Length: 290
Image (tube, rainbow, N blue to C red; front, side, top):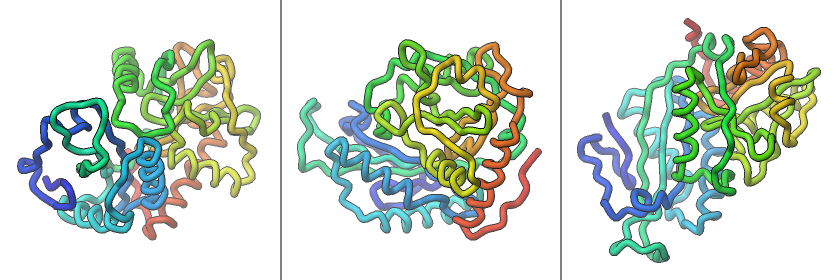
C-alpha cells in the first residue's frame, strides 16, 4: 500500500511520524475524508474549502495551494489502484521539541493521506439501521474538523456494544445535534429538518449537498434544533456523511421509525444524490447493491 507523507508517495512501511509531532501529542491538527467513485474525487473543492476554514480557526497555516492536494490525491489513487473508496488525510501543526502547550509559529505542518476501498452498497442505505441516543458532552467547536475525536469514539463504541450502527448525540436537556460520525436529519409531514450549521455540529459536505438537492426537488426544509421527542416521532430519519451518503434509520433506541426502512422522501433524496455523484464525477455508477 502507498501513502502520502509530506508531498511524497511512499510505501506504508516507510511512513514515519516523529514522536513529538503535535498531532500525536496534543491532537493539534485537522483532517478530512474524501469519497472516491471509479477513481474520481467527489466534492473535492468543498472538502478543501472546509479544510482551510478549519485550519484558519485553529491558527494553522497550510503552506500549499489546494490544487497541489488534487495532484497528490490523484497520484495516490493511481498508486493504490483505488476504484471506489475513500481518502483520509490530515494536517498536524508539526514537530515541536521540547513539548510545549504554546505552539511555535514557525513549525512546518505534517501532511499525510491514506486510501481505503469501500464499495457502494445501496441495500445498506435503504434497509434502515439501528441507532442509540447518547448525551453530547464534547467541546463547543464541533464545526472544526479536529483530530480530537475521543468523544466521538466513545459514543461509536457504545453504539457498537448495543448492536447499533450509529450514536445520535443530544445536548442537555434534549436537543439533538449530530451523530458520532455523521449528520442526522428527520422528515416530518414532508419537511426535512436538520440542526443549524453552528458550533454544535460539523457542517457535513454531504449535508450541504442534500440541502441543495432538497431545494432543487422542492422539498421544504428547516435548519433548526429539534428534540429527542421529534426525532422519535419523525416519519423518516436518515444519517448522512461521505460514507453513509443517505442512509435510512430504522430504529432509535427502542423506537421503530416509520416502517423501519427508507421512506419515500429519503429515497427521493438518495436517488438525487446518486445522480449528483454521476454529474460531479463524470461517471455512470455501477450497481453495487447486494
